Length: 293
Image (cartoon, rainbow, N blue to C red; front, side, top):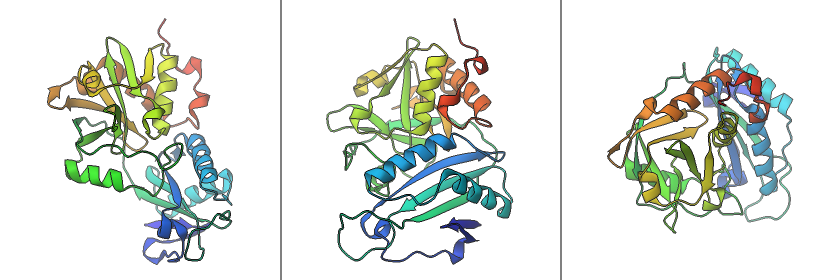
């Protein structure tokens, strides 16, 4: 496969970065992962906006614009002969001397990874409550950063089975998020999802689903919820930009309707409609969605 480093397309085995990149040395870097559907990078504008915000928080200057990144993505699609792809857009701080610095990083490394992903296929998962607790963000908000130890330890806890997703609780016992997902559940026709104040990542798909729920006139409550509240659900699903809307068929051994869940199925159906054309959740048009009256 080919990847792109700072605008240069090259074979992945030829890719190199300096050992003095502070993304490598101190974890100063952020990334976005998203899918390309038939050549269209779904919700790219939202991903790019979040990337810019995250870099500003790390005092890293983004020296490329949206148009140039899209150009590089299209070049990679061509050279890799792909129409559907997994994309990771990664920005690390760039080279600097050994030691911490308070100066702005002016020359970051921008890397675009790509791999084939095939046609989307909805799968169901089993969800379990993790013993390890969700760590608190290292700043005011959780960034999609290079700091992944908490997630890795959680993945080791649940094991290699891709059909199992672990769900974090906070130290206070509130439901947080999945290892690689945001969590939603349904009770009596109302959707619940944890607040950002629990320390979770504000996932792009999470934001899209909350926006979509509003258009569908489905009530959603964002807040602090106990494990017992989650376990009392009628249906549940998890979301991320690669796996989309993932139905939960078992939660701590409790059987759930999974893909047959009424609200889960409805959200997935509308997701499928939007994924080949939408650039931002802000562009959902009422005319494109059959809003329940």
